[in-house]
Image (tube, rainbow, N blue to C red):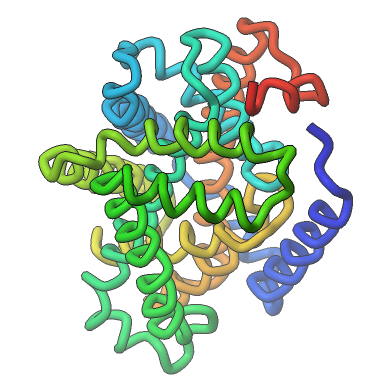
Length: 336
């Protein structure tokens, strides 16, 4: 699938802007000293706990897909890693479509249904990230005077809450009242789209609603939410382990706040790998807590690489093993 060039260049421009904001005033000598003094042994338990979180993500996806088809978590894990690899190296989070296509190839699950479950994942992730921020709002209020990006996070969190909770409510209502949703969707398709697309769009809508079937049970909703909390606590555990490689210490709650802020920031378009949009708010949070800028920059860079590289390498291995190439031929499979 060929992404429009303007998507790439817009993302690249935003990444450059965020990098400039995060690194201005940085003394390179101090930064290099912080990097040299780091104890990189602590990356090993950090990467290990992160992959436990990836396995939990695969289990969550398996759980969401269960009403459509029961697929073992061990089958979902390689496909999940391929998706996160795709998000890391392709623009516009193309890895989400990539893993839906591969799941269709391997398990014959319609792409529309897979994408519905993936969107549900992202909504729950956003809700949990906002929860991490709100849990620490009292602490955040102490940091906003000279905290760069962090100073505006309260307003951004309120806006984000409206977006994610609004989307969650819409998806829950669509799942609980499928017949009403189908009638409304059919009316919109009939009156707002060309006639030649009606049959295909109605088929996509029905498959998409099939992907929301797991949300029809309150117990399932609670289970997905609980799993999402566990996933992001495990990822914060990686932040905690990597922190021990550097000469500073903040609370686990501070790292939860950092995790929430940087992952919300990565929803902003950027160059592949979330360059800049991850780093700038991460450094801003740590410096707001009194961490030296050079140490904060070193830690954030190492953390970013540790989050990016292992999952990308493993996903690339699994993608190669599947014999799949990301090109125009995949476009034909998206709604086949």
